[in-house]
Structures are given as structure tokens and as C-alpha cells.
Image (cartoon, rainbow, N blue to C red; front, side, top):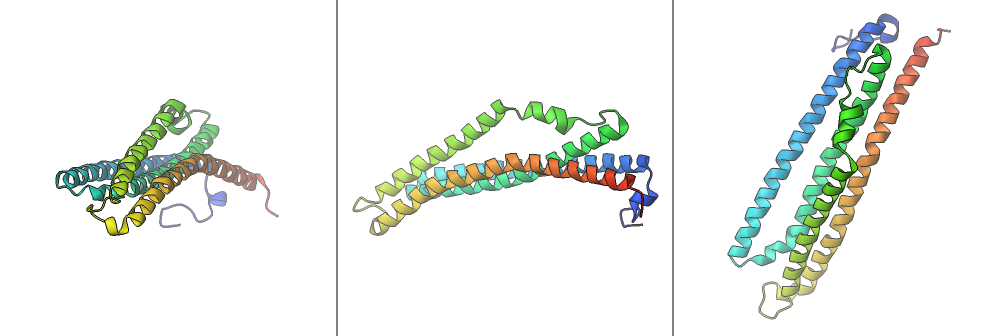
Length: 216
């Protein structure tokens, strides 16, 4: 027996009913992991957005607007981390959808349809477009503000005038590279879900084949 109580050689010692129970339990555990990832992402997003809003307000109120040049980098870093967490959740979602398909095949009844049906309805193209639009708008607005602050350093008595060319260059690079990184992460999470689902379904298929193959 293993630490989890699962036989060391389930193909020989486990009944189909036991395997189905394990799959159902695994499906529940994956759902809990997805929920935890989404909750972490929501907390991180809420906290960092509040801190950035406070810091930006203080910077403008104290006449230190040059700190706003860091906004594109900060926003991009937050979005990339959020998409990393969401990519993990999407991968787990693809795995859970494969579990739901396998459980339904074994039981002949849709025990759980959250990922295979409900999730598709919730995450439709309209919501995806709104999400992309929101991220793009946030990056565009912060980039405009940051570049304005960077260009202001060209004035003779402005803060950072001695190195204005560096501020303009680095701010422009972050304003361009940030959206590219965010878009790349966004596209990666879309494909990862389908890839994990396909791999899991293929693994289930191989397992069924090995169980029906007589021993040599």
C-alpha cells in the first residue's frame, strides 16, 4: 500500500468501482486546487492595484510625478504574474475536464460537468474579449502617463534632466515590451488547457489498453 492508501499495483488489485471512486476524489481535489489558485490571484490583484493607486496618488500630490515612469513595468509584472496563476488554473481545469469525461465514460452518468460544460459557458468569447480589452486599456493608459513623465525630464530644471535620454529610452522599452509579454502569457494559457486535457485523455486511453491486454 502507498501512503495515500492506494494499492501499489492498481491494475491487478483494484476493481473498476474503486478506480472510479479514486477518479471522483481526484476530480474534487483538482477543483479545490483551481479555487485556491483563483483566490490567490484575486487577493494579489486587489492588493497590488490598491498599493499602486495609493503610491500614484502620493507621488502626484507630493510633486514626485517622475515615479509614475515605473507604472508600465509594475502593471506588466502584475499582469504576467496573474496570467501565470491563471495558466496554472487553466491547466488544472483541462485536467479536471478530462477526469469528468473519464468518469462519465465509466459510470454512464455525468457526475460532474463543471469544466466540460459550465466553465465553457462562463468563459466565453465575450468575457475573454472584455478581459483582453481591460488589460490593454490599463497598459495603454499607464504607458501614456509614464512616457509623459519621461519626456518631461528633458526640461532643464526638471528632476532627472541629466539622464533624460535613459529615462525616455527605458520607459519606452517597458511600455512596448510589457504588452508583448502579457499577450504572450495570455496566448500560452489558452493552449495549455487543451494540451493538458488531450494528454490526460490519452493517458486514460493507454491505461484502458494496458488493462485489457493479457499478460505475456
